[in-house]
Length: 414
Image 1: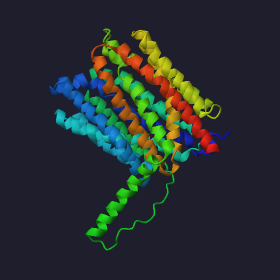
Image 2: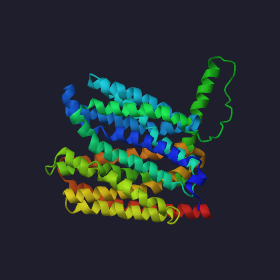
Image 3: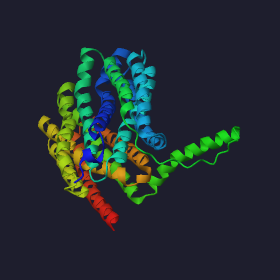
Image 4: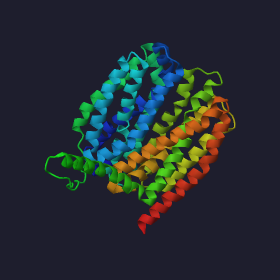
């Protein structure tokens, strides 16, 4: 069996840097929700207006995923991460100092658009660097760091804001981004294919400049077309869309379900943060199983956790069932999502960054759809209905994911 140390020189140090990048991105994304009430009170705006700022951040985060993927195919993974980190650091400082909601919204949109590059680029770096036989192990580690960021942000942002103020949260993530920008200078760039010379003119005139710009844009868009032209890639994206709706979208309502029972936001946040804890713990189990259990088997284990995770609160919403649901959804992320994520890194090797970025973009689109569809039921306190609907959709999703991954493996062997 190939070991990670033998496969990738200095692999442990590289992986630690990638984990820190993913951790920072996730903390920045999940830290917003606990701050909304405090931001609204401090800036003297409505909670709805503050929530609109958060929505703009999430939209920028999702939209920019495929864009960064195409750019990293052209410019390189490490370079894109460093550009994104310096942009996020500057916008984070502006966020911490913003005196008005409009300025804060602009700063958060820029921050969201920048940190959107970090996790996809980290995952693509793993896909470019580690061999396919062991790739899911480092991918699981990166995803586990992301999940740790979820738990840290959910439980920690509100506490830090209560002690010091909401602005310190944005300042801390900005400072960490600046430190990582420096640290990534030591991360070697994976070897990328050299693009063929473009056909634009060389006379230095207006037509030549436009031709070069057009050629560059074509080089950015072409990998996306390559991904969408592949049948298996389209299947992976469809599975990611549904997974985003059922896992991330419905996950949003674990904390409100407890708050509706009278629990404080702190208690609700800590309990719903069990999702991140579950992912971190179970990812330790996934690593030794990679290579011993086929990807379809790993997907089946994660799928069983998903079905069980939504079955528990479907028959009674209380603190223990929400806690168990969070832990099981974390296990789902470690098994099922890491399998789909690994699949996305290998399904179209010629356009790996675009495939991974499109996968992430579709995943968060699904999250937005799931959150929106469930919102009217959550507003009415019908959380059991929300969880039962997630349970009903989880079953065909799991069956489709297992059968599709098995079919892909057989197609590659034939």
